[in-house]
Length: 262
Image 1: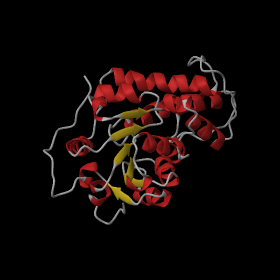
Image 2: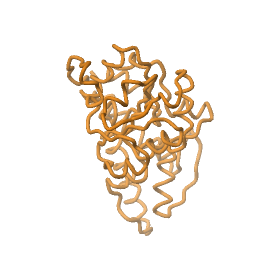
Image 3: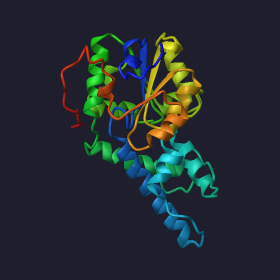
């Protein structure tokens, strides 16, 4: 399959479509941004109070350093960028622990609180594309660094749209390296029986696009803030602003409002 200048051509010949979750299907990227900002702002305030001078966290840090990566990799990457070293700790570390796992627990608690509050929203254009793919029997998977993918998809009412959900926890159990490594996307395409040349990945993160390109899959980006230039530089063959743009115009589906959690 060759991705052309026509957005719909990237979907029309696909044997399988692999979706990232946060920022692609659901607007949970905004919830992650809130959780990351709260985590690092509080941590850096604590360190500054202790006499360790740390540059403040900004939203650009999210796009440049943590977006799309597994939770603990994102923590390590941002701390390394600030020249901060802390112990890794263990998976049992609670949010009060200043370890990589402890900080991950803090961030996840904030995010899950947003999910429990019913703040999961899906993008209307993404749901329309999922409708079209189901109507045309194109198998779909979610390949997400999040360990909460099942909970988020369930809250959005979309879990039944996917024959495979590969989240961060399952990827770790399988020994698959996280994005920007190609492992998770390559494994998912293989599980769906799709040839790399006929597999489309849809991502919003630079790290995810890089992973898809490294796996030899067709990388399509939806720009939710990372920037079209950065996504193209990472390997996106096509950048759109809404996934409904990928639906072949000769074969439309009924428009459907965005779904939300209850």
